[in-house]
Each structure stands twice: as structure tokens, then as C-alpha cells.
Image 1 (cartoon, rainbow, N blue to C red):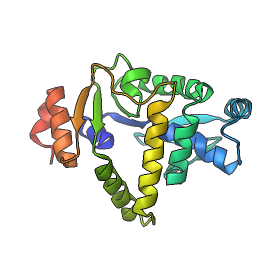
Image 2 (image 1 turned 60 degrees about the horizontal axis):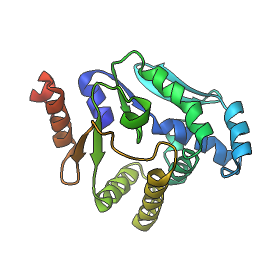
Image 3 (image 1 turned 90 degrees about the vertical axis):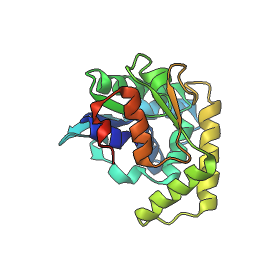
Length: 209
């Protein structure tokens, strides 16, 4: 959805979750004990994470490697949720995210965008959906990429990630008080996009399909 909105507005698209996934990806490759604060701090201090604008698309790099689709597995997603609870990780990535959005003209996607990273953003939207619908969407997404995944495994991982993100002490998952909340459970991508553009009062609303 965020990617579609950015394309419609001709803005850059920033997937901040990819930054956490990138760190988690390297941590898994390194067999890092992600529950060990000291080791995690050392890992963060020696790992280079960068955002690069490649042909109008923001890409995530770790130690000079474009991690691309390598970070899009369920295992990496769950690990990313786990390490995001540590202040040292959030501190490392916070300035990088804010720097990317400093010039405006960007649609930033992430679980704490409006509440923590960009509290003064011009517009904030919090998209929600029933758990079963989110599971279905994730299953279909993986299937479209020829990635095998059982619904039961997706359900387990998604519930675990939601619990981790909601209950963490640092930047827990929550809607910013001034965000527009949209329940997308029964809406198509085009319908959600139209609703967002209505709030933005953008003339582009005339053509969202």
C-alpha cells in the first residue's frame, strides 16, 4: 500500500522495516545471540547499514551488500521483530530513517513511523486488518513469489511478531494519537488508496484504479 501511494504521489518509498530485517539477516548469518545485549551492541557498532537511492528507489545495504529479497523470509521477519526491542538497535537505525525523510517527498512505512520516527509528519495513517485477513494476504504474497509457506506457520509467526511489537518497552506498536486509522480488512488496495488520497485531498483521487 505504501509503495502504491508513493508511486501515485511520485514520492520516494521508504520501507523502514527493511532496515531491521537487514540487521536481523546478518545476525542470523553470523549466528549471533540476539538476546545478549553486549554482543548485540558490538554487532551494531561493527555493522554498516545504508540506504541508497538507485534509479529513484531506496534500497537497503548491509556491509556493502544489497540484501534485496534475501530479507523477505518469515524467519528474518520474526528475528527483526525480536531485535527491534533493543534500544541499541533502534538508536542505530533511528537517525538513518530520519535522515532519509528530512527532505520530505517520501512515504515511510513502518510500525512506529507516526509515533516515534516522524512524530511531526504532515500526514499519518495507521492501517489495520483482522489477523485472519493478514494471514491470508501474507500467504498469497509468498505464493506469488513461489515461496512455500504453511498458513499455520504464518499464523504462528505473525502472532509472535505482533506480541513482540506490542509489548516491547521501546517504541511499542501503537497508533499515533493524530493518525487516521483505516481498517482495511474488507477493502481492496485501490479502495484503501482512494481513502488515503481523500484524506490528503489530492486531485489524483480521480484515477486510483
